[in-house]
Length: 159
Length: 83
Image 1 (cartoon, rainbow over the protein chains, first blue to last red):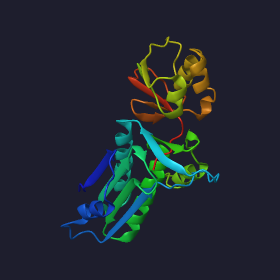
Image 2: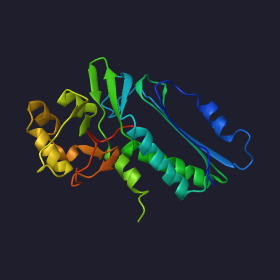
Image 3: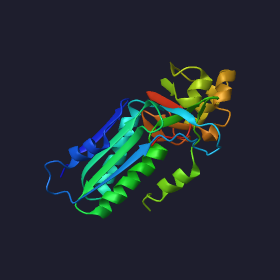
Image 4: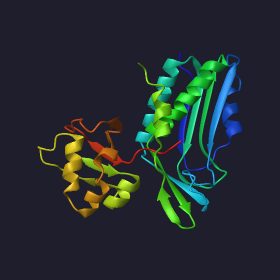
């Protein structure tokens, strides 16, 4: 069975409620919807204090980013009994308070929806070709990758 | 082949992409990184810590021991920080 899978990369913002509604509207087979929104914070990623960030600038690898997300979406669909899936990732300049990423998973029951959403976010963090740059009053700098994100992704590896 | 650079690798190299034709002795991704490092100070700077650099061949993540024969597009970039 093919399920509705939506993957979008876009510069403009998105409406979380509208995306969730779009996935479940008119359906009677969905018993659980889980959504994760990643939002731009104003404090520095590494928590060095002081200087708040003015914006994040997200660079991505056009073409590969879509394909890489699609590969992980396919894997999520093969591992859990999902009935719908939406992944939206923004690129470009994003200010604090604005959305960066959205994952919505639908299933008959909550467990598959929770697990698939977490799996997708862990893989987006470590495998999707995006790079964040922080803009602050003292200039801008690339965000460093975190070992804890690799650890989070590694727990989904098939043995 | 087309070689692409992203994030701080792109900034250090000073360009987003270029067409390159490395000699046949350059067989793997690691060989290509070593060969690029010899091309000038900007490349040496970008690839000064080769183990940190991630690579993709034709838009699929690869390890550095992967052969590059037949690759149309090779990309180099730092560890990813999306999501």
